[in-house]
Image (tube, rainbow, N blue to C red; front, top):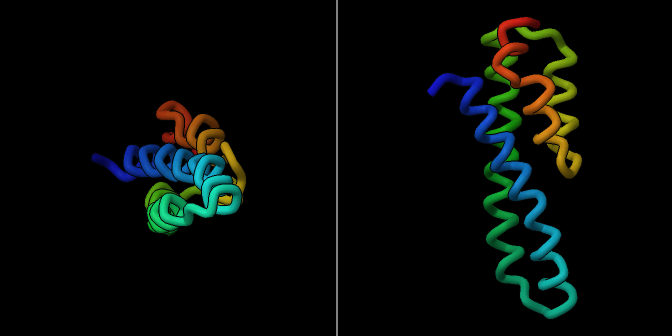
Amino acid sequence: MNHVKTLKYLANLEGISYLLFAITMPLKYGYNLPGPNRYVGLIHGVLFIAYCLWVLIVGLQDKKKMNFFWIGWVMSLLPFGTFWFDQKFLNTKQTNRS
C-alpha cells in the first residue's frame, strides 16, 4: 500500500471516528455512560495523530505546496473535513499534480 492510499484510508477512518462523538457525547453527558466516549476518544486520538503525520509524509514525499499541508491539517479539525480533503486533494488523478 502506498502512502497516498494509506492517507486516504486514514482520512476516512479519522472522519468516522470524529463523527462517532455525535453518539458517544450524549451517552456520556446525558446518560452518564463515559465508557464508549473514552474508547472512541482514544481511537480518535491515535487516528488524528496518524492522519496528521501522514499528511506530512505524503506532502514531503510528493513535494506538495504548503496549502496541501495547511488544508489537510485544518480539515482534520472540522466534521466531514477529512472526507472533503480526500475527495479534493487525494483523488488519484489530482495526486500526480501539485
